[in-house]
Amino acid sequence: MSNIDKKYQTNLSGELFALSLDPKAKPTLQAQLLEGLRRIIVSSRAYAGARLPASRMLAAELSVSRTTVQAAYDQLISEGYLITRRGSGTFVAKNVSHLTPPPSRPVSDQPMIKAWQPFQTGLPDTSLMPHAQWARHLDRAWRKPEPGLLARADSLGWYPLRMAISDHLATWRHLSCDPEQVIITSSAWESLEMIARAFIGEGKSVTIEDPCWHKTRDVLRMNRLHAQPTRIDRDGLDPARIRHGSAAAIVTPSRHYPTGRNLPMPRRISLLDWATQCGSLIIEDDYDSEFRYQGHPLPSLSGLDGLQHTLYLGSFSKLISTALRIGYLVVPKHLVGTARAYLERVGPRASLVPQPALAAFMQSGEFAVHLRRMRRIYSQRQSHLISELRVVDDLLEIQPDDAGMHLCLPFRPTLLQKTTDQDISSQARRSGLSVGALSAHCVLPNKPQALLLGYAGFAQEVLSKAVRVLEGLLRV
Image (tube, rainbow, N blue to C red; front, top):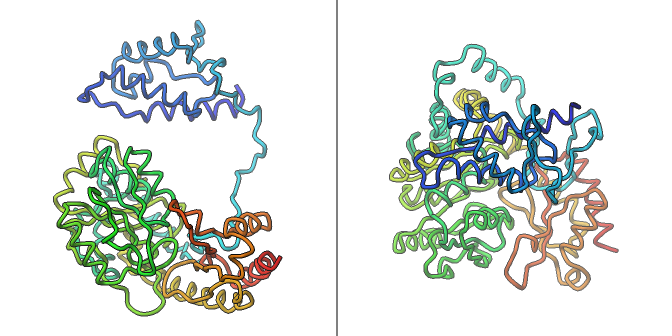
């Protein structure tokens, strides 16, 4: 067996060992296992010819009887998904139409590293990370780990990290919450998925901003919820436009993504009144809130509400690295039990490995120093980018933003007559730039035209060169 074959067989075994079966659920264990096996094969994560683990081994890993596993294998053999070879085992059938064999060899022995293109949004500058300090905290956490790290982990996450996040929110966002209300997740995606499954339920309608982060719509659709896009104006989401019967609203009030607009206090109060009167939930995604360069931020919706009808989403992907895969969700006290029951059923996804190091990093004060340094450098980069963009001031509306990691630049009439933001985005991609198009984040008609330029992750000289390339594209 080649190394590449071993890799795909290992991946398949890992997928199968990770299946979650609930003996208390209505479908039988055999039916649950059969559905899980079929889903993995149909989703093309199992290559043709891949060998499945022995029934005895899979039964031991899933804590079910060998008879249950063998019955599921036999059913998939009869359906043509699997084949059995006497003395060799059970394999994914090669005649399943959508499956292809694994490549005979990797294209390269070196791992593929994605090159970030100038103007890509949402990227922090990881070179600013105090790596020596971070490594020290990781080493201390795992060289002599606390007993709790090696015991059965709390499904809500490492408690000292939840305490550190609680303190961080009280200091930076004036949001008072108990550590028990903080849930560690792997990402904003997982936080939204948990909200959809545990707190809202299938078939409900959820108000979303238009434009918005496209993955918000994806999460709702995948969890059988109905997204109700509501066009924002210069002041963000207008609560008066929320349709009747909406079970929840997902908003980015402190810095709307992707326009950067700030929801004013009267609308924040109106939105909270709507939630109270309708018994609906508000999901507050506090996107980019830590990176404020001017003035004082308005209180978070969750802080104003006292976490009665609001749930607060946060992430460390912009503060440390997108590779860290640590986010968090703050929920009302009366929903903590529901969250715990959900996570104990499906299992937590956030890795425990970085959690004690992150807790120590935050508690030491080094995280706050790191955050202040990022603010200062990102502010300088925004100022530099705005200065460089004056050469296209006749085509784009150039204005500073008091927060965030990217600029949203609306088209002026002269450019509107010539092209679209998505055309410019496509041309820029071919020229080595990652220029976002505002209209790509919209679903409602009459889509606004604007370019999204990320600056946080790029040095000033890189931004200067990128502006010259962009100017050439805009003036063609």
